[in-house]
Image (tube, rainbow, N blue to C red; front, top):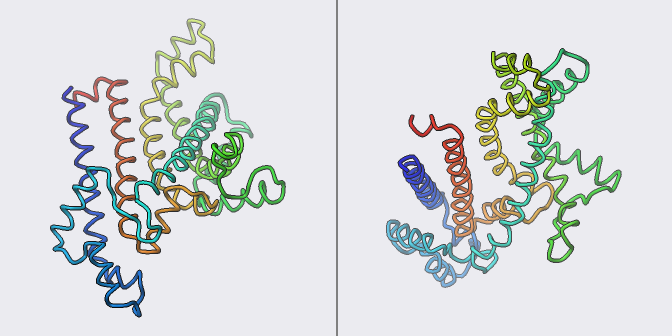
Length: 314
């Protein structure tokens, strides 16, 4: 119970700190947001009205307090560019990002675990050497470049999948929605799968050298059962730690991938909001994004504490 309370307090503190840092960082940026929105030739009366709407005429401390109270009520204000509540814009974009992230995570794990186990057992051969070379290439390949290659090779030249855009399940069905996200998911998954493959390989080699593995083999336990039930299970703690870090980076990487594939997700919305100086939208997206990342680590920490009781008592 103490472990859960400690982690919950750290979660709330991290979200509050991120929200506060985001608010003050945007407030101290040079330039008047009202002038940037309406232009230097804007009508003075309209400029003053927009400053009132944004709360720029209030003292900084009062603006922060009013904003923080609104955020606690899940009210992030109204977008300046879209003239819609920020919460509505995020509700429309969030499912796309979550669907993309879940598909990318599943793909990365489906590639990394069997490849990592395969390269960790047996003697070196051309296939294992080729997998090692591909993992190096995967780690070094920028996401935006990989995405453009996939668009050219698979979408444009062969027409197997859409080159961009997103088909919402409510309009086009789940099949088209999945097809429109496969290439972006591969773009996100391949670099992560490369890192995880090498981590699985290193962890498995370490575990396979233990005495209990040789004992299991001497008792007639099959190779498949030894590798996947005994060795992979005990190597899972290190693998899971690296996987959690990679999945957090994956959420950040959606900003670039959504822009490359023209996906209406949180990342693309955030980039547009920054370029347009839409302060309410930027603040809302950063706070929600940070809360998602911190919450993911919170759940993962609780899971590790459940898997390994030693962590709870450190």
